[in-house]
Length: 347
Image (tube, rainbow, N blue to C red; front, side):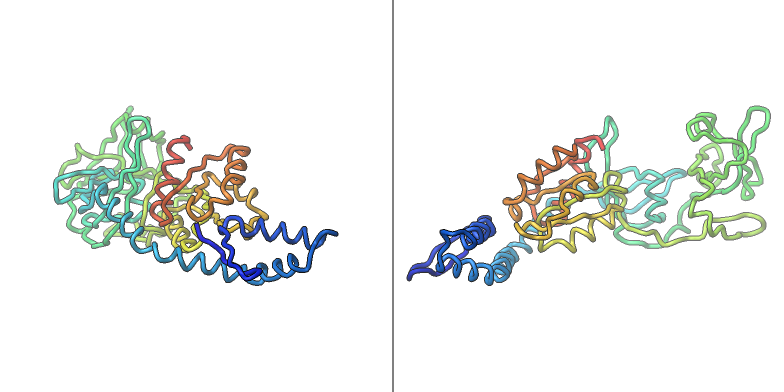
């Protein structure tokens, strides 16, 4: 809570920031009424003139606590995350940390982030959906060691004969038989383009790593390899964080005015869209309800916007949008709060 000091009749008076605009409105009403006085009109003019400076002072005082809080959040997160080298599997991969912990990385995130064998990847637990753990994956260092992997991949059309499904491997000059369970679960049909992968020399361990859609962006640049064989041309992935909760979501953050740019960076790198609203009363809040309607979740930063939160909470309830109060102003805390709110709501 910050205090506004003003001088009148030889004395100083203090006012909390949350009441500043309410007093302005009160004085404006008095100024236009028959009972208004010159003193009140003068006080209104002074407060109106000083408002921007007052809000700037609020911001300056809030800055003092930025560094300790951000460092504390990073330390807490480091205790939970698993950091290690990615070992590529026929389908997906495994992060192996120095202390022996292992986390499986689904194939979809390997592809979306352009991970390679040997990359340094971190995994932060987000919670559970049913019996399945959720992790946020981040590529910490791209090392380009894919050539060291024994993983062999083949891209080709699915063929069928006498009830068997297979893809032809030019490396082995053999047909790779597909498991019936994978054919059913992926809904494969003859002619579908797939990537099948296996450890070098062990066709029996082959898995269908990926089924390509006709408009899959990875098919834009199928580069020719030796002979008629094709391989996928490497593309720079659009982001470096794989977030199964926030990807494709729209998040409204109210407050945390100092952290707006950090919020945007941290949400966009997770594939989410940020909508932001100032925590100061009298800010650009005319369209706040339309932002609530557009959002998948709202995060209300309590210690920087407490005077606006009740109205926004009512909007969230009215439009049936999950919301959460975040006591932490740092971008990491706001991201984690939005993730937990979405997991809890089942969205």
